Image (cartoon, rainbow, N blue to C red; front, side):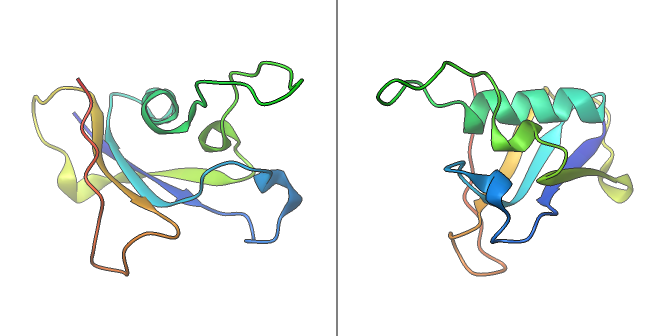
Length: 105
């Protein structure tokens, strides 16, 4: 099953960021790029609660094609393996080379 890398493409001061969490890189094992985005959004992006009188929204920053792009990691294709997050690095997280491992059940 292929691995997909989701990376930010918008400028840091782009108004589309709103209050979305920012990720430097998210690597996801999935059959398609669309499935990779949905898995990442479900695991990392959805806010559980509303604040104030916000309208409920299922949209996350990871699902916005103007904020993030999805790239296939050709060299890392591996047979088998369950779909899900392999690695996620917050934009304000560890320096390059360090990552935050996020596992999903």
